Image (cartoon, rainbow, N blue to C red):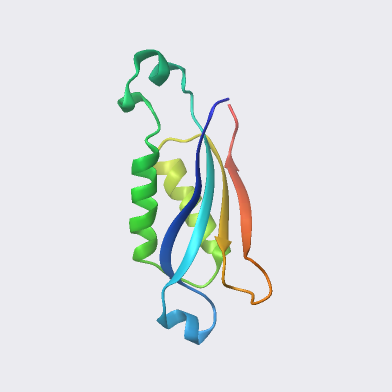
Amino acid sequence: MDLVFINKLVVETTIGAYEWEKTIKQTLKLDIEMAWDNKAPAREDDLDKALDYAKVSQRLTSWFSEQKIELIETAAERVAAILLDEFAISWLKLTVHKPDAVENASGVGVTIERGSKR
């Protein structure tokens, strides 16, 4: 299994359960590993056969800019669904970091794996 990854994708969104969080944008950082067979794109040097990480990044950045979510768990599940459905990825590992959530921590977050490794 080959992996395509995006590290520390920065997105801005409205996220949080507290009332004050529902009125501001906050930064999340995403680490994404996605299963993809890279043999054909590499052999043919063809972006159309590759998993285009720029398109993935743009899609997620745009999606997050429109959201109002309370939990990072919800964000993770919805992102996983987008990636599995829209990009035909068979498996992914996703970490959602919320860097400023806890004063005396560099960040908090969740990691999920969805799909099946082929």
